[in-house]
Image (cartoon, rainbow, N blue to C red; front, side):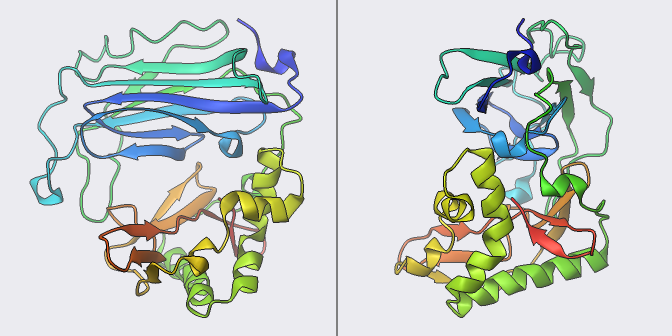
Length: 304
């Protein structure tokens, strides 16, 4: 098996390929949620995840839980569906050459089987330990519902080259789940909300600048911050005449700390953030999703 560090990719492109069937799941890379699905179904998707990769060894995590019934009030189904299945694979390739890719880590989980069989179909990868399973850790919790039944599968990756960019959030403060942090982060969201409300495009560009700069680096965009703004469509909702800014959303929201304590966001059970737009005629909600870190001076910085 080719080692990603030895391959010395000039412009490494990292992709996460997912297949989810009949199970609730939160798929994380370095404790950053890539895909969250509360209800049953079948889906296959691929994500470009350069912005969630770090130099060295990364960690792939799959958190599964019996899916929700039709409404939150009905709660979870009692058992995993017998055909419940999650396949997750992290690859690296040279930018633009996805036909020649290296498998960095992979988890194939069937939570309907006995614990000792659940990950038995995961691929053996030279240089990697097997999948680690845990069904006793603290459940993933949201303001309206806690997923009491839960199984977590984790696996390290082959190393990423040492010269891969180091992100600002990696050197941020460790964030604790406190009322003080909730209140101060909510104030940062309010600043974004007010910029939208006042149609202050320059303010929005300034607030998004650190995030846009890192995305430009992560995805090899020419043009720095401006290219990052274009990539992320910064401020696009100001130009959407079919949508309106909803009132500042704080009902049932909570502080959600992730990235091993280095980033945080404010969400509710539906994963809505405080800044929300709604379509004027159709029942469509567009929530503005942000991830923040706290710098050495204690200031919240939008970074993801």
